[in-house]
Amino acid sequence: MSQLTPTPLRPLGWLLRQVSSQADRDAVVGDVLEELTDLRARGRWPRHPAVWVNLQVLRAVQLEVLAALPRLLRSAGLIQRDAVRAMRAAPAHSVFVMLVLAAGISVGTLTFSVVDAVVLKPLPIDRPEQLVSIPTRDESFKVRITPEIYWGMREQLGSVEVLAARLNSVGDIATVAGVKSQMTIAHAVPTFSKCCGCRPVSAVCGRPTPRREAIPTSRYSATGSGGSNSAATPRCSART
Image 1 (cartoon, rainbow, N blue to C red):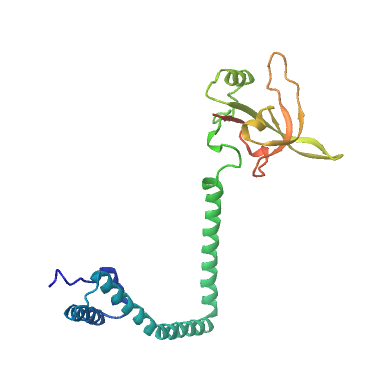
Image 2 (spheres, rainbow, N blue to C red; image 1 turned 120 degrees about the vertical axis):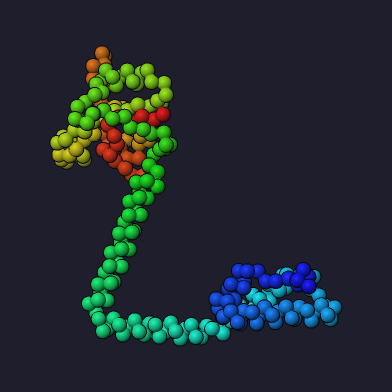
């Protein structure tokens, strides 16, 4: 008998018990199995008994939910009324709780925005996974990469596609549309925009020395595909 008579799925039985009670669940399952036995006695046995039993239990869950819906709505209204009365009785405490919730939500949103911009969101350049930075100063802020070392790295490293250097110059006078202004201007090699995937907007290129005693630089403003300024890039950048 137990082998021929199917039983409802455990999740459906648990759901029925949650919307009603243990006694109601047992009664509903007993009624469904009894109806299945009557169908077999009358020769109207379903083609898929297990599916039929689960559908009947699911229908019982739906009926229980529909029957309990007015009671749930009434309980929600009573809870809302009690909340409004509590806020009127203690307005200072209510304002404090709302401020704490607002601060928590704001801090969570700000934290996610920072993590998304710094960790999750890729750099606004082509192939950002191949862009690496080479530190040029030690812990005591002494320059360890001279122009000679830079040129040697650029000519001899075979695993680097493009190697670019950049320096900051504070207090330079820039002229834009006939208006002079003092601002921070980035000095970089001519291949800097190629390395970082930037598009130069305006440039004033320096002349490279024949003996390469210094790094030929270009003073320009450049924006990448994401609108980032060139002044935010490291001093030495390389694309592997």
